[in-house]
Amino acid sequence: MTGDGLLREEQRLLVGNETLAADTLRSAPGQPVHTLVLHGAGQGHRQRQWPLREALALRGQASAAIDFSGHGQSSAHHPNSLRKRLDEAQAALEHLTLAPRTVVGVSMSGEIAMRLACRPENHITHLITIVGAVYDGAAFELPFGPDFSAALRRPESWRDAASLALIRHYPGRITLIRAAEDAVIPSEVAELIRQHAVSARQCRIVDLPGVDHRVSERSAQDAALRDWLAELIAS
Image (cartoon, rainbow, N blue to C red; front, side, top):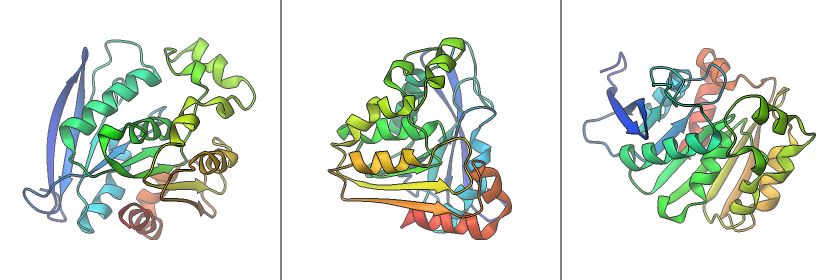
């Protein structure tokens, strides 16, 4: 139990040859978990979204999260790739959440969240990206490293993301959260997703003024921003 009386349950998931650290956060025993929150790349891990998840739980929205392999408390036996991350996120979705589902992808996991949402069997009704990225389809199978980085360095390679074709068939709601001062993800990415989301029931772009790419870190210190994000996800 956390200081706010919320209920946190630590778990372990075996996915392939990796053991992933995971947890669920509820406001009441037995409360169903419908929301999966996926952290970003670099030094990312599930704890960065913990304050936001607390804000969600206080609104009655239970959530689950994992550390991708090579991050946080998860193992790192094999090289990572976007494909591997998608497989790990799919396992988390199936084992930790119930339909109908909401998925939140931060930064690199924007691509992962989109691909999860585009699988009808996942029954995802609300897709949220926070400073979300999309990637050239040629980079999807590549292990993270020099070849992957070279694929990303091709100017505007994100315009060739395979996930853009997939999102055309997604029928649910989409919320694309951009940071006005983001120097990592071009603002055009959200516009491109919205242009392709022709079947979505709703697709909205929300801009965060005065915020850079480090939304998770900023929201951990800024209660007003954190509450706004929680409302966007829970609404």
